[in-house]
Image (tube, rainbow, N blue to C red; front, side, top):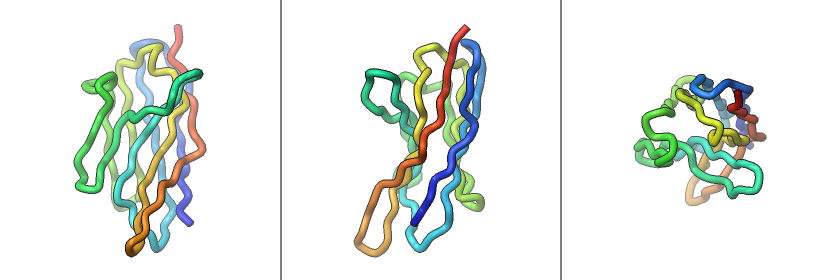
Length: 119
């Protein structure tokens, strides 16, 4: 069973930066997509940034130019570099992985890490 372990959340002032990381434990399943979602109070969970099954990157319009996702395959780790943070970026950020083994597919979520942007 793959486990996703997140780190790097915290509090920062507007304009500041944070880097989130998510490491997937090794398993027989392969990771076909991996990235980040976020959920602010009262809002639905939304995509932030993702590597899809073709290793293309997708970003929410609201974070384009400010956030960068990267994936270090040797570490089985995905990073989210967040620059020029805004109060509206405040949310719980969840790591996501799409797992595949044979014809099977499943979704895996991390426990979430809080990001708070406030002066």
